[in-house]
Image 1 (cartoon, helix red, strand yellow):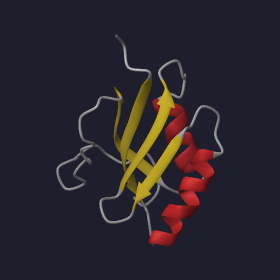
Image 2 (cartoon, helix red, strand yellow; image 1 turned 180 degrees about the vertical axis):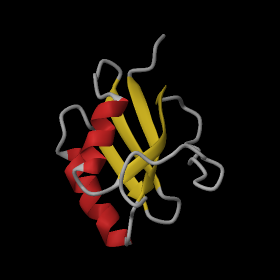
Image 3 (cartoon, helix red, strand yellow; image 1 turned 90 degrees about the vertical axis):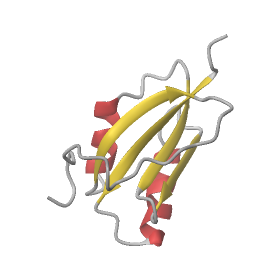
Image 4 (tube, helix red, strand yellow; image 1 turned 120 degrees about the vertical axis):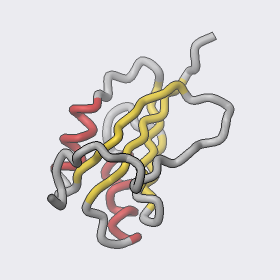
Length: 102
């Protein structure tokens, strides 16, 4: 059976403090279809859980972060599996940021 939820992951560019991560999370959780949002300052990762049917696209996620003056790279959206969450490594993720600090 297909997973009921999907997980969106990305590396966030331009984060300045753990407190800012909390503000990002509150903003993301206010968006339609977002069930869980967690931005981690140490790993520079964001994790957003959405229903499988959600049309939250990469372009929409990029626009949300750009509205906060941040950028994302290495976006991926995968079915939520029972396996452990693996953060993306900002050092090995070489995609150019969409916005934020250039």
